[in-house]
Length: 405
Image (cartoon, rainbow, N blue to C red; front, side, top):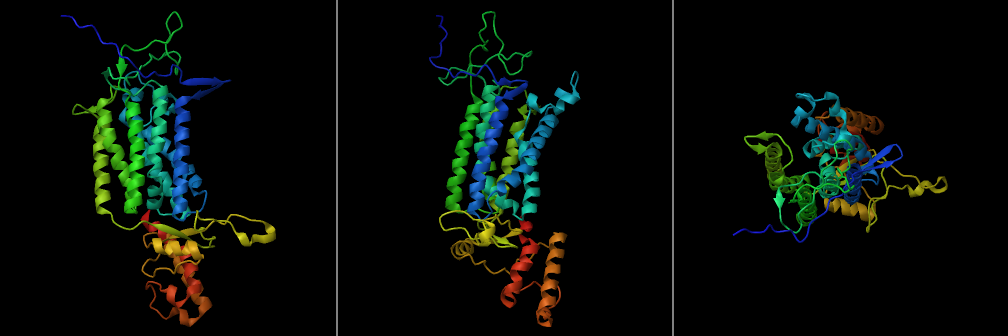
């Protein structure tokens, strides 16, 4: 008995064009999706940073460093893990710089972006863990939006399937990148059969990871980078099984795709961090020139309302100090900065911070006279109780929050 081949009743189409010309400038769908994802991540991160006490607009200062560093890291990872395309037989090394032709690795993007965010966070006086936790739900949402670019490019699909959501895949024209090959009648040519839309599986999984991080972060009050570790665990768990479904070219180790090994190792690293690190959620108050407190129903307002005739102007704090949730709530309601914790001085591992703190302490001692120098030199300062007027100044220069970065 011969069985007739079953024809799927439904299928998911793919775009036949991924590049549009705006005069001499090519507009690539993949680039637009990446940019849109970055915007989504910035919006989410900005909102969450403000809720933790960071001044408005800080996410843009962070993105200026993190986004380019992430792109460079993503390209470096791709070139390192696929060197034969550029340095093998017939390869062209110069094309390692042709980022517009595709080839970005999410693992390198996260690593490079983390370095850029760390540099920016140090300049702003924000602990990197606060930035990471604020970014945790925005990162998978950005990846979800970015995966739409793979749909436009007709790439990153899985094996053959007869499921109703099977993906139609076009044969792309090698002589006209970004466009499907067309037959004599001008119709785009399709690959035979339907394929698993693994890009869509990862998109939906990433949205679920973002929801998971938001729910658990709200219930468990995660802090000290644990929300970001939760995102990493959730993403890599999905990437592990989705990567096994993909059929695009990839390097293998022991018969398994390289990215499968990477996902497993990164998951274990994030799990160890999540289990071992403990601590409450971190909130920040400004040091240096204090800003106005956060209104009870909103975010930190950094506008100097006393400017009067000169007009309102944004006040940028010199840095931030980590406080408890109760202290932060009091600050939002009253505007009074909590006293400095004498057991929480500037990070001694940061010579710049230590020198600045010493200079600030000496300056206060000179103004206060001998009474300010009763304690032994080098002892942890207890200015919160002895000299309230000097507390904010020493903390303003010491930037103790750098210890977590």
